[in-house]
Image 1 (tube, helix red, strand yellow):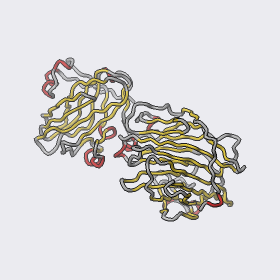
Image 2 (spheres, rainbow, N blue to C red):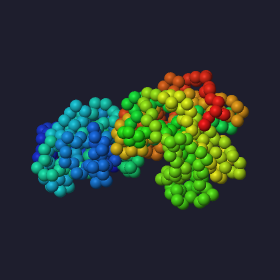
Image 3 (cartoon, rainbow, N blue to C red):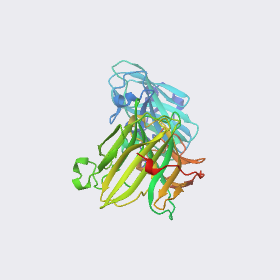
Image 4 (cartoon, one colour):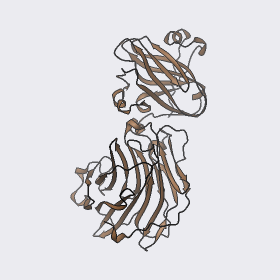
Length: 432
């Protein structure tokens, strides 16, 4: 959806609103897009301040001159970019506005809601860009409250991408998936094996690297806080609700067993069901192994069991085993994903490598999975965020999201990795 908002300013107004020379501008300036602060801005260097100064009203409570805020957007074209802010203030102040290597000092003299002209900048190449603002000095308690950034000029004559709605999801960023292509002759899948390696520096707070997804749940690793990481295994109830308390007794997920130190309970908000997690400080740069079993148990129940292998421990650990009612199936719809569940880190990039995928069938045969379909969620598909990628890196698949990088992988693309040819060596009878 393209918003076209025109603001026309005479040269006298422009000259009095900022320190830029008048000859930078024509007699009027057309701003083609209005970029909301809430869905497109982050405090850099200190993510804890995001909730303090960025909200539904835009940039507010901005008192610290050391706080730097960046507003992100993507352009199809390069060229001149005219920038202004819809802002209000209770007192005069001065801020610094930067884009690339250019910086401008901008004074705000007015009170009440007004348009603060920053001036003209140059975009040298298409892709994602950020406008950075930082306080210089203020005569009142705070710097201006900024609601929107207005942009126009040659750089905006093509397509421009930014988050226009659904700001919560926009701030989380796009989620990306690997949909594994199971050979048609494989038969029923009893076990699904996968490996994940998160390169150093990509274990960003809020990341969920999901290894073994299936038609009724998922299993992977998360970064939950600076000092907590989890191995998570969840199974959805067949009853469709976001409130676990609404699930009828005969459609609740039943815990059969769990590993030592594993926490179990219910979850909601994105479907409801049974959840288990094991607190484990997994490390970037280390390869972890995941094994999932799905097998009908009779009487319209299916049991799903997850095991996790950490080389630091050097043995398979049981996470949990759940029984799902009204279900009679082996493993189907196998996939992996990468998502960010913490809005404060939606501006930080993260990447995961997924390798050595195998299934074990009811024909007692290991089959390697080397083909995937790359997919993404609604945030990506409606082009609110374009910072997502996936595909092949040698004999591994990869997923990457967030961080406002400019390279984008077309959604619904197909990829094939090199096969490894060495099936996992696992004695299923010895698993805990």
